[in-house]
Every structure is written in structure tokens, then in C-alpha cells.
Image (cartoon, rainbow, N blue to C red):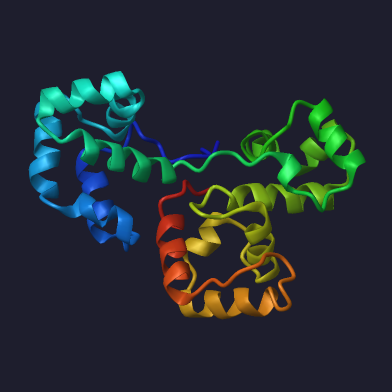
Length: 220
């Protein structure tokens, strides 16, 4: 079964440090790189071994303060680290955001207990045909929605942007991870002519970040 998210238990601090060091961080997150070796060494000394440990320790203001005291790492730095890590685990998108779907289709999915992209992605692990039969909807519609759900596992990808990726020929997170950024950027711009799927502009640097983020999404 393919996980919706990165396995934080299997990701140690060395893996996380490498990801931060090799990522093109947005300007507001660049301070994370200041003395990164020293700070991560301090976190290890405080008993943090994995990304899962770190997320747990940063979850509440109380536990974050405790980690700051135990490690000597400034709480402001830990808050910034928490925000950055949150982006590695995109929140499941509600099916209500996929506003191009027919109401009856959405109602059938909700009746089956499927209300967001994670629930739909997980339900499709046993096969799209089986899911379509269970819910009582068309297989083709389910296939498109499962593809949208898969693409929404990538950081920064919304349902509308996922449609643009799908129209560009990129059907899942794995295909985005393998993409040539320049080719992908051109394909997205072409697919979204006239703001067909989303408003705004996505540049090459954005797409490079997207491809890099997709590389960390669990694959089939």
C-alpha cells in the first residue's frame, strides 16, 4: 500500500538536514540554514532521532518550549522549523474544493465516507475499479479524481493546480518527480492558457521547487 505522506518514522535527522540543505527554500525560511549542523546536533543530544520525534516535540507550544530548553535551540528557530516541516505534509484537500464535480458524484463519495483527497487516495489502493463499483460511480471519473488526489500529495499543489498538471500529462506525484522542470513549466503554462485552471503565474523556479518536493512523496 502506498503511503499518502512521507514516512516520518523512517526519516532521520540526517535525511531531514540533507533535504533542508539541498532545497531552494523560500526567503522567509532561509534562516533555518544558519548553523544547521550545530542546531541539529543539539536536537540529537536532546533525544530527537527521527522526523517523527521532531514533529511530536514541536506539536504544542509547551512541548516546543521543553525542546528549546533541553536542546538550547532558540524557540523562534523551532517555530520556523515547525512551519517548514508542516509544508512537507500537505493537509488533505476537501472534496468541496474540487468544485467542478457534479453534486451527485460528490454526494455518493461522501455517503461512502470519502470527504477529502487522502481518504480517496487510500480507498483507491485496492483498485480504482473496485472503488468505482463500491461507490456506484463511473470508473473514468474516479480515475481522474484519484489522480488529482495523488498530485495533491505534493507540497503546494491544490486541486485546481493538479488539474493543470493532469492536463499537462503528469498523472501522479511520481511523474512530476521525474519531470524536466523546464518542460513541465512550459506544459503547465500551455495547459493553463486563459487561466483555464487557476489564476496567477507559476515560474520556472516554482516548478523546480515542485519537482524537488515531489521526489519526497511515496511512490507506487
